[in-house]
Length: 242
Image 1 (tube, rainbow, N blue to C red):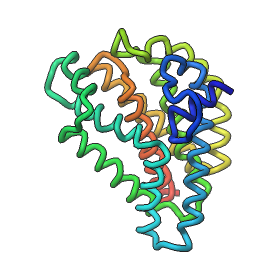
Image 2: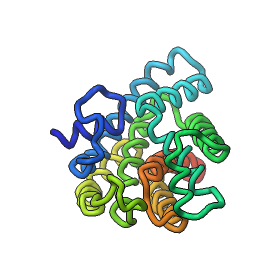
Image 3: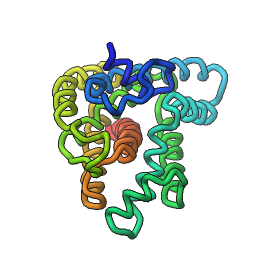
Image 4: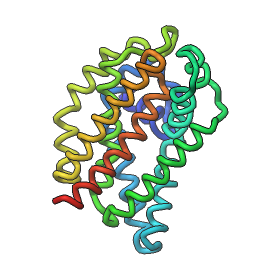
């Protein structure tokens, strides 16, 4: 139960104990996909409510806002900080310091804008009140586990140290349940989206390793956002080619 509460407190705005779970985040990792599913169910409920009140464009815009609010903008902040740091023409230590800076630079603003724009546009291609929407946050929060298991943490003094083992166990434990849940909710399109999410997460983690030597919390947040966009993109492509 403590692991679930830590995951809820870290990944959402729900007022639960353990609001600062990084020191004990290892036990929370197995619950990341479940929390993603809960976020997805909340999005689906919002979609059901908004569908009768708004047109497709208003619905998509409102869903993007609800999506960001449910996570307190945590992962979007990761996108901004990771983009500012990883894309800077500096040394690796300087890039890490840039990511510590709470101010957003040009790269960060552009990256967040692109993520929000892509989500809005791809949601327009998703049928209203589709159960497949619930699978998107689920797939994304699973997709961050393999990079955490396979790539080192960039800051030797960081709280992310020692999470490779728990992340590996969480990825193995949740692999089949995640695939099964995604397939039940979204069918083959969901599996296509999950595959793109996993590939995109590993590619972004590889880029971070080249630029700063490994992962940071901001990079993990960026991986989740990129995985959500990738999953929606997979839905859109599947709908065109099937």
